[in-house]
Image (cartoon, rainbow, N blue to C red):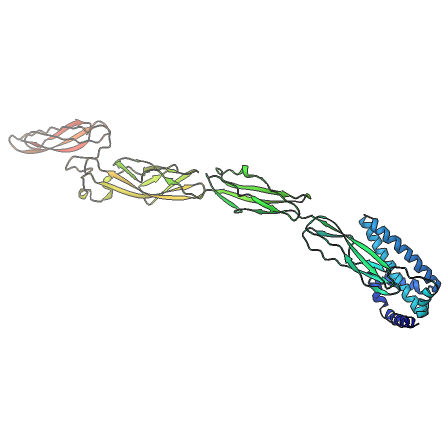
Length: 454
């Protein structure tokens, strides 16, 4: 009797709490406001017997769906079952509360006193997705479950089972709830650990990589890591890198894990020329005056070289390096008064700067000196009868003869040599006579001479 009074007090307390939190408790099943309103409307029109009958039908359906849920492998079917179990749980909760509100504690007591045995386990509702999916390597936090018993209300739930997210597979979390009459319910969540993430590729060395033209290229390779698999890297494109041809090349690295997830990474290899040409010709040239050709400037490089010249108006150079005078070389051009120049084998030196530039605009410079040697002394001086010889033939002598009409007198005759060719040489004229005479000579050079007559 004492225990019955205690039960009566507890039920009265539960009844009061039920009226205060009716809507809140229904929402624990994840139903919408319209779904809750529909259940309330339907149950409010039932009498006591209809409520009892509906309750038994729902309990039977609940048991059947729970068994089906444990055996199905269809995600869509499992989702539908979850939705229906939530509706059943909410409706059973509403019926329980309506019965208490309708007939009070006596009605609840009568369910047992009239021979009804409370052997109905709590209803477990799994929170979140079931089955649940988690990516390999990620952390998994279970969302748990709730349980509600029609006689005792909210019931504690325990869970068991572990999920190893480092290993692909299917795991089971089991939820257990036991009411005060020792009726136990269980439910399970399936957790699928899958690998949909491709391996991570790490390229070793520089990217982009720089290669000097004409050298060799050795690829530094790449490595790959994966959460679930031991992976390797396949490299393509290394054989296409031509260190002898300027350009940009691509090397591709590919890695695939045990679950078909593939990743790729690329390295850019730039072959370029950064080395300037190297001069191989001498920086000094020596020519005789009258010459126009000087020589050829040479340099080495892996690419085509273009030569240019600065610093002198007397010299010019072709793109291929052929060096010449603009006008024939002239030793006396260094002075306005050639008489003051040394005629002792000294040279007239002209300097200029030659630049060698390759196809990649790498440039190197060389200061060159062109030395002009004197040939034949002072040019074009009538007093000495000498001139610069620009012929390959030796100089020849012209002779002039002078005649005088006055005996035994001293006369000066001027002889003029006449050349029969275009060569320039030295001519000497000699005349004999008294007075002034004119002598004419014939030679291959042109010049002036002085003759004396007696």
